[in-house]
Image 1 (tube, helix red, strand yellow):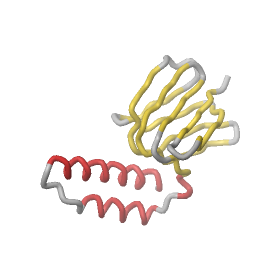
Image 2: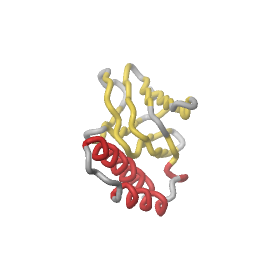
Image 3: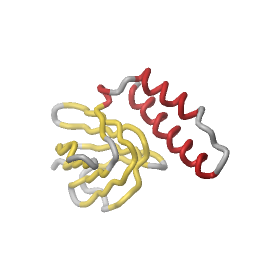
Image 4: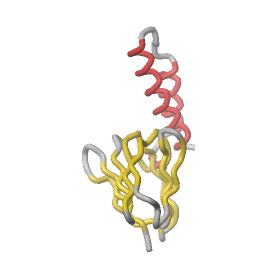
Length: 128
């Protein structure tokens, strides 16, 4: 029995696929989901979501958000879901360099910089 993976962004339902296995980038590591997994809700990080489908593997850059697993459905709510084939590794490295150069003289600026660096590093890893 396959899992159903539904990825929703603010604009639309980005993806609705059946998969045998799903790997999610969580904020504190990676989570593998197979059929029969216990229900859960978790905070996503910035990185690559991997699906093993009948047609072969698929990979998407996920830009944070939340994942909800219940029964045979995995719902992913995220700001962006981009197929990794569409990511430009040079652009991702430039974004990382720009993020590392952001000021961090106040707690607010430090938080903005940390988030920008995490996003850029996730895109760099995904674009490889």
